[in-house]
Length: 123
Image (cartoon, rainbow, N blue to C red; front, side, top):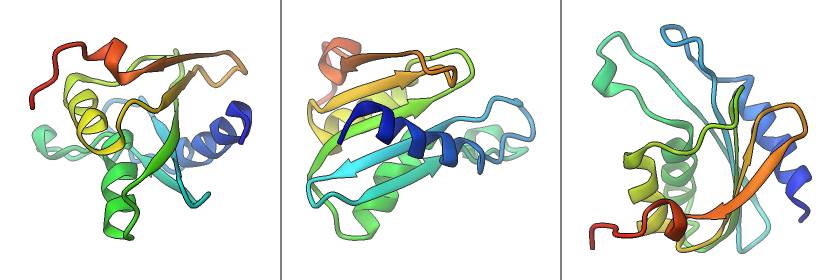
């Protein structure tokens, strides 16, 4: 699957985000080894520590559906931001060093891996 196709799915997820407090919607699309695409969006709460990022929603949803091997993940924000530290750790633990396509929603994207984002992970 081409990066732009996976990114287009992340845009769909971004449009579903519940970002009432930050006004910063994030979408994620996780490609499984089986070719399925699992979406995730950030879901915010007034009790901010209970908020969940799009990356973790996608990964946890995939695991709950029985998927354990992944090919790539696309993330979309309005400014091309990279995953937070908590998400970097979860990406490391559950997806391995897959390509991460980081997009800004304006057809621009960069490619990286979690090993570059988190060179000294827990574990």
